[in-house]
Every structure is written in structure tokens, then in C-alpha cells.
Length: 333
Image (cartoon, rainbow, N blue to C red; front, side):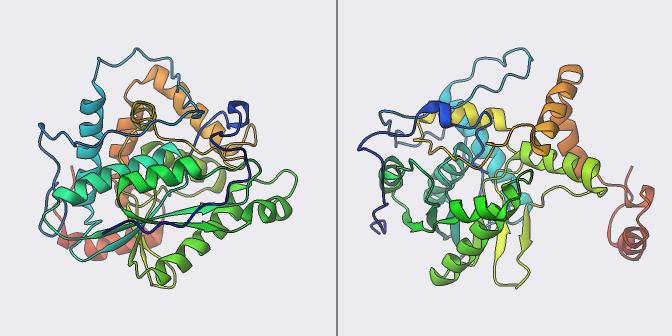
């Protein structure tokens, strides 16, 4: 099937992306089982080579102060990311036979990685499912979506580029000291839900990774007074779609290195990460500080999200629900 292609509006000069000093300091873009995907073998080497574009925005180097990891080839890194993603897909049954999945592609490192790995895995999957990549042009100053559109065409999956001026609306709605994230996220989600219904998709895949989940856990714990991170899957309030996060156990540092090696044409965002000293930035800084003292703290925290002791919390509703259902599960040690 030939990819569906809608030409993106590009106000900037041909072949150029906005200057790198407009890029936020923190570039965010945001087990085998029956009926699911299986992880590729160690010898899996996809044939396609990522396309490089002139004027590409360089990805940031996440300096956590830790020793450099052992040398790993780009292919080894890609395979490891793929195994981690497919393990999450299998454990949480994120992809099933007959699914038609809208993959939200913001133009950042996370969503490129998500679509790239899913597209390669789909060709070798034991079950049939479809991917539809959707990118939203938010009308940001200096936006040039042509390199992204070219990459999507090379990827070979069906894709569509939407045009909605959410940028100016976010600036109008956000108060002087308020974060852009909440209004921007609400509008983008609404647009994606509308597109998913029109395109006949039953699932929406987002590019949140492990560090997003851990930062969200800290944000809720420290600022909102609740224990809440990010689920691998959930159903929208209206019941129409399932939202899945296949990258949820992948490390951001791995995604950064992979995206740099793959040469994805990063589209900078003037909203995400553009407000200094935000709460999420503070949570990220706290994680980095903890990691200097506890090198594997991110791995340990992710494991904790899978190893909850409801009987040792103070939420009475959770305790009662666990007591009612505890007979279904083996005792936890």
C-alpha cells in the first residue's frame, strides 16, 4: 500500500529548519504471547537506512554525570530498544490481531523512535495490524514540516499531516506563570481522537518513555499528593479508543543516542520545554541527582511501579479492593 500523503504547509525557506538556539534545552517529543508481537532475534538487521537531512537539529546530550556505558553499535542499541518495546507490548497486550493504530508523531526523538521500531516490527509480526502515522502542524513560528514529511514517506507507512493553529490558542489560554503543557496536551489529544475516529483506528500509540513515567510519578507524589505514574494502556473516558505507550520501559538516554544515530529530522517545538524551571524540569533534576548516588535508581523505580504493596498504603479504597481480589493472586514476598 502506498503511503497516504498530505503536503505540509511550510512558511520557512526551503531546506532549512529553525535555528538550533530555538530548541528547548530538554528536547521532548512528549514477552511474546498469543496475539501479540514477539521480540526480534539477536541477528535481526532491518535493511532500511535512516535518511539524513541538511540543517537537522542536533539532539541534546543528557549528561547525568555517570560513567559512559560500554560501547554499543547503533544496530545493537536499536535491537535492545526493540526488545524492550516488544516486551512491554507482550506483557501488557498492547497490540492484538486486527488493530489499526494511530501513531502520534510530534517530530521529536520519542515519536520517531516509536514509529520506526513499530514499523519494522510489523513486517515480521505473527499477527496482522496496521499503523497510521499522524503529525499535527500546530502553526508554530518557523515551522517547516518538509523533512518530516519526506521521512514519513520513506518509512512506508500510511500517514497524514494535520494543520491546526493550537500554538496561538495555547499562548492565549496559559496564564503568565502557568505551564503550556496542560492546554497544549488537551487540544492535541482532542485533535488526535477526532483523527483516529475518521481514520478508523481503535488504538492510539504515544511516545512516552520510562523517564516520562518516573518524572510523572515524582510530580504527583511531590506536588499533587497522590501515587500515580503512567499506565502502559488505558481506555479514553468516552470508551472509544485505547491509548498505548509501547516505549514506557525504554530509557530516554537510549532513545537520544538512537535518534542521533538514526538521523531523524527533529522538528523543534517552541512550547515543550520552553518554560525554564518548570516542575517537570525539577523532577528530572531530582532524578539526575539521585542517579549520581544510586546509579541504577531509574531501573529500581520502574521495578517499584510493577511491585506495589496495596496492604502497606493508607488508601482505604485500594486496601478494600485488594482484599476483595487478593484470592486471585499468589502472595507477594
